[in-house]
Image (cartoon, rainbow, N blue to C red):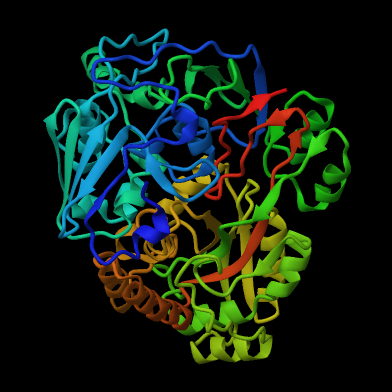
Length: 550
């Protein structure tokens, strides 16, 4: 099976994926024309106290773990998947593939016998095949595709990763074979296909919606091949799923019902967990970690987070287009005080635009010193001796990379006041926050990222690349010397050369300061004692693959 990081180390792009599936699936037989026999699921219901309502159920439209937890990893599958709880890429709806010697052509051999969900609003007449793969990617690639015209939406990750310009074509060779052709080789491409945006839709369901004039329902009434079948959604209250008895991989579905109980207040989530009203909660407050860990009815797995909390400067707004202003704002922030107060011992100050566990991380990078006097002098040099006024956006939700954005914003506000910068703290409901940020309404904003695929491009390209300025590049920073490096790095499979290019890009980042890296955190996951099989996803979403109740 291909592995995300080692794959990049081979000298040639030529790679044939193994069709051997993990031992857990060995008892399931797959054959041409043979359907998976329905499994008898345990009569168990798991309740997850989640933190926010999803904006929708079409993973390609979104970039946050709320939608990925509620749709991508419940309802859907992708051609390739990340190993649950890890970063290894393994077969998904494609059971094997080949990559051409020049790294441009990927031929995927699809898994036979996979069923789409039967729901109250859709009953499939056929099994998953190449038409579904073509429909999924064509609607992102071609604005003239029928579904794209009927339901025009943005696909931020597809664009941020450069696929909107680099994916040349997606072609059906036969019902179980698909060929994807790139204009230029892309070392991260296979890992990118395991990300939520690449979740495979049903072409038959899309055709039904088009005939009904209801194309937008693809975002409200999802149909996939995943381990859980969507049943209902009551906004700000509950999402209900049934376990999928026809799921193509054994051992994954161990629940008959899964309920997301939407509970924005972390104190209420904690109370419900302690009382047994839910068995899993997300994003505990740092101050509650010790007491949750001491509760005999709970378990508290944790691991170093693959994440970054940051403060993005909108470089299209004056005076934030001035690098001296950005450097001054950066130098005026007391990161160590923030780590102590906001993360309460569960974080470390960040220096680079990626976490230190990412390969190609530049250990030689140094932060500018916390120096309000020098920061004030830099502002004066930039023409702002009398100070300036900015909006400072604070996230309304908790995330591992930022467990208390309001407190962090207040601390930054106080730091900036010392150099004559007046920050007006602003916030919105989470979906609106992200939407307005994509539109560039902010001056400075708190945001972050939990890695999506284990490749450095996921940080440097998605957070800082020119192709991402209307997506997750919330700094709206397009700097050609930087962008040329990351574009070039995508086109080679030589890890040493990619590392050299990414190291230089990190040096440029540090010189230009499009955002201030704040911290990396430790991720804690509170569970009831009777939850078994749960693994923390290094990429952030809460997943229930292989999760059961004793």
